[in-house]
Length: 469
Image 1 (cartoon, helix red, strand yellow):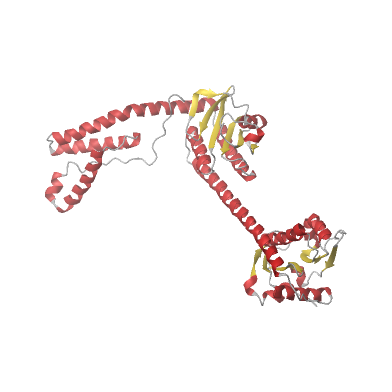
Image 2 (image 1 turned 90 degrees about the vertical axis):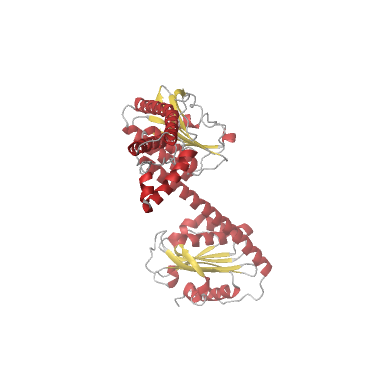
């Protein structure tokens, strides 16, 4: 008789069907096996693995179950010869039998009873982890009793139903299993969220690279992405300029060239550079490997900027709590370091190129700083001129053009919009609306219609500290 445990039960209990992936099925199987091992329950365990070769992956675990349980029965197509394990009996299945497509677990005792029944979805991969399943998991005594009856028919034994069950003990087992299941789900959610953070960080960094900015800007963006997206308490990129002098870019926006840092060889950053590999310090206090670039970090990761010719520097991130990072987090930092190393290596004459760009940025910022006050003063004088001096229409038109130019310049260099100009902008908008309906108003406002209200940038320019450059 070709019996399918799954089809015999699932058709009558559609509401119990909720297992759809091999990963979910394996987690449930692990939980049940853990319960038997943790409490050393002397039960009969029936487990189907489709093929004996699938069982070999769980050999060590079932060696322990063979010692704990009264008997363990393993079902599968004998595609390999299983080893002899005390307490375990192997039941061979025909390749075309119904049970050869099913994975299941069955325990039915007075103190603990449950059944997990699954069937491979038709057409899904048979020998890979991508195989899809349709399945159910139940603690219902009626369901478990029916599965036990079917199992006795498969085994050719006499079925003895359980007349008296210990519901208090069963409830305790269910509560314990559910508690561990919730823990697994929480871990899965945290892992999924962390992977999203990692992908988001790489996406942001790749976007920054695609904007073809100068290297100092890319370095500044990189540490900010690690700080904001990746969740680092601090992030630093240190570039070796020459003779072990390092230009350091930190998440705080500090860039140092005139006073390069030389003392990073003792920390995780120096170790990453010297050994050319990712250095992960789970707990700085226990490990004792302090980081001069990040003295308050509780956990550290340092990835070398390893090029084809040499190590150009290091990317270091620090965490607020010990053991904050995972292996995948380390791979993310390494990926960023590799992309940066490729970018740096594309530059010719690395040291001179970086320093030159920084000096130009410094000179530009100093020039802009000198212009801000005169531009603001000039705009105020223009405002007084318009208010106190009677201008001809053509003079007002020229004045409007000049004011529009100064407004654009003021916006670009970060001169704040004064309250007077802000109110004037609102009045100008009202005047323009009135001019559409009244020719006289249109004529009187002709001289001011060309004024462009200054726009404050959403991203103010970065100020390089003179003492740092």
